[in-house]
Amino acid sequence: MKNSRFYLLITILLLLVVLLGFGPRFYLRPFFDQPRHMQMDSLPILFVLHGFLMTAWYVLLVVQSALINSNKIKWHMRLGWGLVVIAFLAVISAIPVMMGFAPRMLALGFLDVTNPDRFWFQNVQWTNDIFALVTFSSMVCIGFINRNKKALHRTMMLFASMAFTGPATARLLEWLAPSSIITGTVIIYFFFPLAVLFHDWIVAKKFPKYPFYGFLALLVLMFLTFFLPSTEFWSQVFLKHLG
Image (tube, rainbow, N blue to C red; front, top):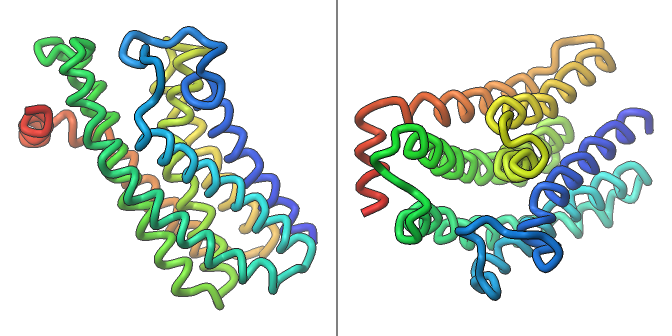
């Protein structure tokens, strides 16, 4: 029981990051002034669909943790099938949303390709979206296939959810601490996997291999997020994407 309460807390914190991060832009749009590129009467239906699906994922992640905490394993297993369907639909809806964001910024005049800092920042966002989507999809598949292996299944589902915290955290800090978006996003991003890693290490009294592998995967994701946009090759790929 003690262990599962910790995982329940982690899933609740992940949900809070998503709700707070996308609150002003998505859930509570009418009550907040929007940046220039988000000033529209209504969001495109695809944005709304993707937002609904990702919200459902994090909400159900909390529910799944609560079911385990309550020893309702059968309900947890039944709901798991629905979670996989939501993950699949969320990934499918994410592709056009992510691929269309930067070109839309360019079309609206918000992105100036001759501004190195702005170009790099937009490239970083695009790169993170791509590899977060790949990481999320891979981990959910591994977790589902190994659903009878408790430790591996739990780690993959948790860490898959952590892979997508970047956009929510960046938007949260965009409102609260615009001068610390990148630094704050990285700190919060690594807080979650490190918390699980050290918790499992302390509780099990041995080094937890699955959380460690998950942490390495997220570390690679973050490395690629910042490394690739600094290369000429990837910058050209991003330019072609914009075109």
